[in-house]
Image (spheres, each protein chain N blue to C red):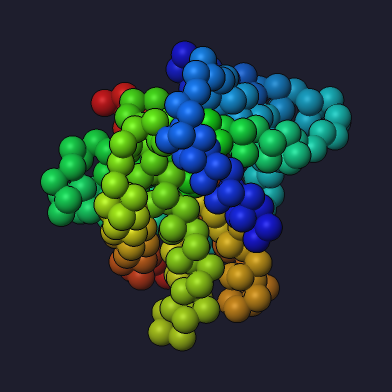
Length: 79
Length: 193
């Protein structure tokens, strides 16, 4: 299933609820769903034989490169 | 900060369970992903506020675009350095620090790169929390907001507010808000290419 479908349905439902002036806090359901999903992501990852140091190394490189890329472009912005 | 520990604990527990037991949870992972995406969409629909965007100047509104483009380019450079297929690098970069969304979205196609997408973006958040106070000694605090990507409206906002000041906090919130609205569309778009 395409992720756009639940996303768009959610946006529309949220917008309709807001128009109907219904207050709804989705913070706790989001946190619970997120932790459950991260756990299942961990299970999926754990089933694959991966070198932990390799994973940590390339993750660090991606973190540094994406921060550097954003900063470099941002330095040209006058806010 | 406490939630960050819960996230790390949840991921570590999942990896340990996967390595030791290799359990079959069926499509529980996909179901929780779609539930989360739906809730994120609902949150966006409930809280979109155009007024806050109008309070800021046009130039502040271009900052998130530059953050996103820079992040994608950074991901591309990293993938080229590592000899990884550029699509993964572009998708990881497009996550802009939103690890809980980027990792699972990429994991639909590759468990390994899903883990890299998750950890890389999680580390971006951790690095922003630790390095933002140092970076603003040399860089304009408003421009340094770009470091945090989509996280600047929630998890990294307290650090940015504390060290950057109240004015920067509004820029940071809108910056994070715009990216949070865009990232759920950009990452799947890149992955579908």
